Amino acid sequence: MTAWPIGSTVVHKVLEAEVRASLTTALRTEDTALLKRYPWPAPDFSRADGTFVISVHALVVDTGARRILVDTCVGNSRPSVPMLRMLDTTWLDDLAALGYPAESIDTVVCTHLHFDHIGWNTRLVEGEWVPTFPRARHLVTRTEWNHWAGEAGAEAGLRDTMWPLVDAGLVDLVETDHRVCEGVRLEAAPGHTPGQVAVVVESGEERAVITGDLVHHPVQFIEPDLPGMADVDAVLAAATRRAFVERYADTGTLVIGTHFPAPTAGLVGRGGNGTVRFVADDRR
Ligand SMILES: [Zn+2]
Image 1 (cartoon, rainbow, N blue to C red):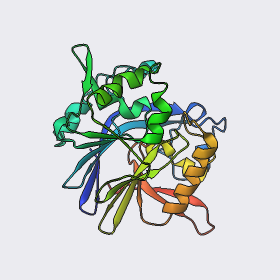
Image 2: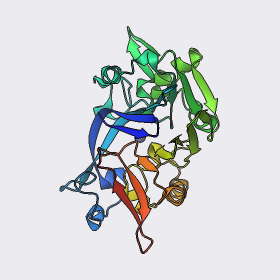
Image 3: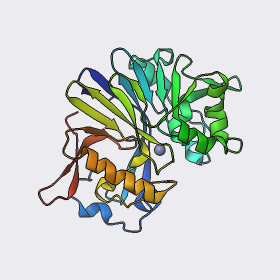
Image 4: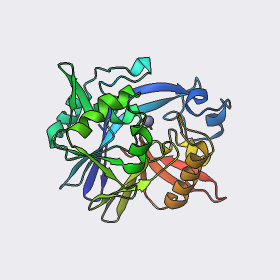
């Protein structure tokens, strides 16, 4: 398992699945030579056959005082994507083996409400969907909830993975700049979905940011107009990527990709001629 110390806080990656994707389906481009034009994507972020790997993982932010889970993968949920329906993985056991049994999680941050980010919010127990993290406050932005709640009746995923939490009183609707605790705050990242957030982790002089789905592949930092999979508003999503690069390039902020395969994190910077680049963090 991968972990990144950020000052006295530690961010752990808990992997659920890795899925092969093509540029055409994932970034909606016919430019299949795209990744070959850059020196850095292969082999971690680009395969010889033109595909790349999308990782589905959660991130535990352990500040010492708080145990915050950022996104909860696919879990037992029932999305329309057949290969990701009702997965039977060891993810929950892996989380516990890392030292984070479900009942020890005090906060779940849902960066947005797509199925691959909220699946383990609930589990199917004897035919009933029950909260997996019964002692956690589940943070969802008000904008995100308002967007999806109206469709929830028709959206089986939310009915299974969000409504049991609402019924149990475990959901807090928050603003997109919400401060979760000392050293952990949300940052608006709209476009992929209307109320999506990134999560900023700060401790001492160090800072990391967890992207949510503002990017699916690091090449989108360099070519921000490349749409991500299922971006609700492609123009706004591109503007969010541009603003993200402006904010974090050459700041030493560790960018932890919610869907990046190992090494999963890296630095965004500019070269001498101002071109944006992504340098994977392969120290770990
Ligand atoms: Zn996603």
